[in-house]
Length: 417
Image (cartoon, rainbow, N blue to C red; front, top):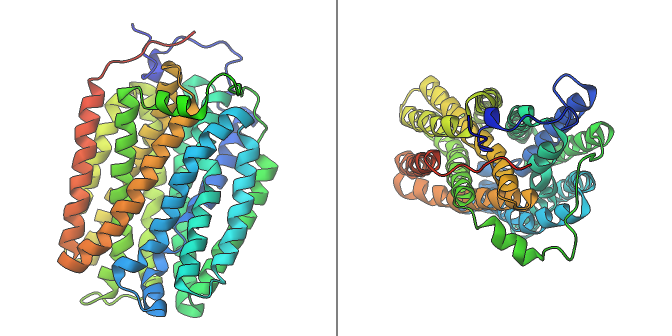
């Protein structure tokens, strides 16, 4: 049997000290802390998504313009990731996570007080910048601190926390907006961020196996070029951008469709659609276990097929069928993202590339896709209705499937050490 580092079941047998194993108290603390941190990060990132129609009405905006409240945050996060990853490779993981969570809760509170639309957009961009600390280091931290046989599973749990966070932020703001308006909605999300930051401070263990990249060993530009040198990594970066673009585009515009005729739902009712997000938590965890058993290559393509089937169902005029379709889109997306994001640091380590730098570039592409395609979806909806949104997103998931096919047949790297 080959020692293909891309297939967890075929790696060389690690020593007993090679990371925390499932069932131990440090493992439980790590997984719980990153689950909560993921929840907070993505609740704040998407806190405006459920209230986009209210923001459009409050500031006199079109549907396309209102989506900037989500897109600029994703853009700020993507830009900051290019810096946060290399910083963590030199300065450590946990301090960056704690700083990110605390700062993001403060900026979220300021967003609720924004006096004008440009001010809100500026603060939302700043929100993205300070949110970058967690996603920049999470998968690299898991690779370093946990036993290799459980890393994909733990990454799936972390991604599950991000899925639950996306749902919580949208449900929370959607529930408050009808009663008290968008300002109180964003204020409630900021309070959630404070609670989660305190919980992570108490739970997250300090890094035990982190090895800093020496300042003289490699400059930022050298690390950046190295992270683009492997074709599999580049393919994974593109997969993240396409999949995230389709996911965000779907949920940026579904509120406009369902608040209009013939559905005529309130924003609070539309926010209940985000209850499908726990499906993503389950699918990411299941995908992580399957990846540990059968390898990343075998599991990744399945997600794009599930998502495309879900998009087709959302064309229905029946609300229950639309809900089922959205659930499948979420499930498929989190299969893709859960597997791809866990594969990146493993592949980078095998290729001798700084893992946080590679993870940051994956997430840069991920949030660039969110920003670009999430905004284009508002334009597509205004020009062609829901059919235009489905067409855009189906094309993106087809692209994911094509890339996954080529990655499945790409060269595997041997295990190091």
